[in-house]
Each structure stands twice: as C-alpha cells, then as structure tokens.
Length: 267
Image (cartoon, rainbow, N blue to C red):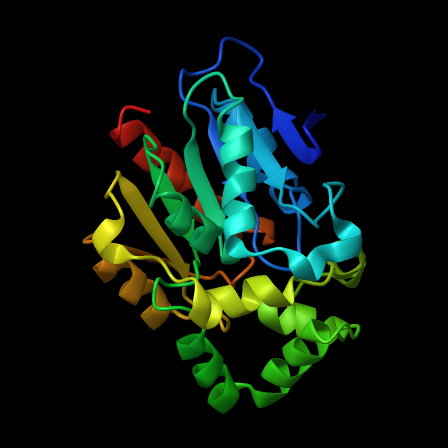
C-alpha cells in the first residue's frame, strides 16, 4: 500500500502488478471512518483486478487536514476534497462511495462529470431523516447511542457491531475497527439530513450502480430502492451483508457485482 499526500489529504493507493486499466477507481468513505476502511479488502483486491485503486480520507478524517476542527466541515467541503484528488489522478475516476460517501458523490455529480458512479448503502438523495425515523422505531437504543457519538461521546462496542455488521464478527477485529473509528462533523450530518441535499433536476446521470445490503439497519433496503428510483436505475440488494459491507468477511458479495458492472461499462 502506498500512502500519498494530495495536498493536505491522506490518500491510500494500491496499484496493479502490471499495466493499470485506463480508468482509476476513487473510493469515498462514510461517516465515522476514513480511507482505511477500503484498504481492509477492496483496494488490494481491485488492484489485483487491474485497477489503480485510490481511497481518500476526507478533511477531518484519518491523517487528513483539519482533525482539530472537524465540526466545521460541510458536505460541500467533502465534495471539494474529492474534486481535489480526482483532478490529480491520471484520468477521471469512477467514484465509489459508501453511506455518507455516497451522498458526497451525489453532490459531486451536480458540477462534475465522471465515467461512472457506485453508491453502496448510500444516504438517499432525500436525506437521512427517513432512515433515522425507521431506526427510532426498530432499534431505539442504537439511534440513542449514535446520537451520543455525535455529541462527542464514545460508542459502545456493541453499537458498532449492531450498526455495521450482519456477521458475528470476532472481538479482536471489532476492537481494531472500534479504535480506528472517529467522530463525525455535526455540520455534515445536518447537511445530509436537511440543508444540502442533492438537486436531482440538476444532476447529470452517469452510468450508476446502486447497491444495498439485506441486513443493513442504518440504510435499509427500502432507502436504497428509493435512491435507485431517483436516478432511474435498479437497486441491487446484496444478501447476507450489513451496512459495513466492504469490511464483512463476505465482502466479495459486494465487490464482485462492482467488478462485473465496471467491465459491463467497458471501464
């Protein structure tokens, strides 16, 4: 793995052994994480498939700029981060975003063109409120603990497990993820809830793949289907996975359809 600096942004990179395919991949993480979540499985695997695979840590995350003033960052700031990295890559990348990262990509599409976009358990263009209401009824303890994290409190390890994983994850791996997780910007959460939602009428429609997870409690399948309908595509709901699909033991259930789709688009 190469850890590069794109200005003050941390970017993790995995390159194929031979010549890379012409279109690179740029992965955008969700809330409470950073680029490391992609390097667990996806970056090395997509490099093995011939892609130059990059993952950015958005401002205030990982080893990127602004950890001390995380709460000042907006979704627009995160969009600017993606643009800053994309502009420095050898060719326009396919953008692949998870959860909040999917919302960042939707906002990016308002002003930028891409060869393709993949939304994985993405916040829908209608925002976070629908999934928050659903969580309030189905898992009120989980919503309460997530609110506590937003206030700067430390989450319970059980909350991380319930929110992210369908599998029975071993405690050592869960503990490692737990220590890698971090707070999220209050401003960005409000943007995703109400104040800076995508303008569907202004958003170009590049080739798009919309993925969800059967057992996702944060962005459940009905929210994923709503996203897909908004962009005129079909939702692909993946079996046996939870919200953190790229970190589950069965991550290939999510990776394989992305690879198939990329090749079907000639990318």
